[in-house]
Length: 221
Image 1: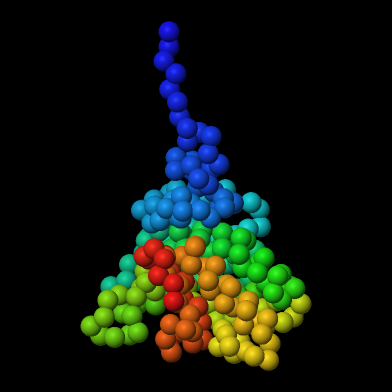
Image 2: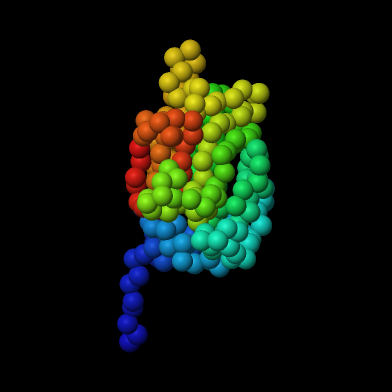
């Protein structure tokens, strides 16, 4: 008589199944987040996830590893033109960061914009992703996540109804509290998708933008 091998994980939803391949459409769970972290060392798997995204979700170019500035080699990176929304300019970022961004955009950013501002986001204005430097440009500091294009700085959101929400102007905007509430909800919800999230309450250098990066696991300030 043949033995029956019980595999309880086969009954789990894919976002809770550690052995199920990650999809950009999966709900964010602790298992999904763990899978995201594994993409840092799996560039082919990461690009395959982007390639399998539903049509219109992300427009990118897979890049070969290269060194744009001496001392700052880039690996596992893509050039982003748009996602479900536009950006003020294209940017280069690590593939895992882009996967996390698209999931965050679909699952949190757009629903929060509808809930608090009654309009979806049409464009994100950013300060870029790659910069070959140490943190805060200090000579003896460690390398910034920007030095490997593993970070993305978001300054403002433009809405489909013509409105705009700025991190600098609206973080504590008492004249338009719905904008402040939206920004704080965006900041807090991003903490489940990115390893590090920094905003205006962290320190003065971040008063005008959100810093998202894929390092660490849950540093949210």
